[in-house]
Image: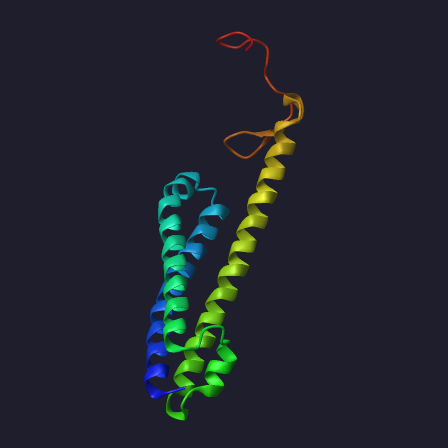
Length: 158
């Protein structure tokens, strides 16, 4: 690998890592919003998430084209580092390691989000299938209501 090739790869990897950093920040915020049941934020964030996905796809297409142009298509990161000129090897290794950490963190956080959403949906499904009289209710002071008042009240039975 030439010095110019190493510089081009490192420069591209720096841009790619900025994207992965932005994506990681977004996914982390999304996880916090799922925990908080912030459905409004989650719905509003779909456009941003789609933009991030499209930007990632665009960067990957550019990486493939660049690697093809440089004659290194299909070469794995480990091989690139080994073939890199000594003076650029540590920088390329850092960029590749950084990307790997972001990708792993994004995958783990996304898996956590999916697990939480599935668990929340499962709980909601169980609650929705319970008869009304078995659902627990609490007063404004946190006291459990033992008997539901369905005696008619102001509007009558509903």
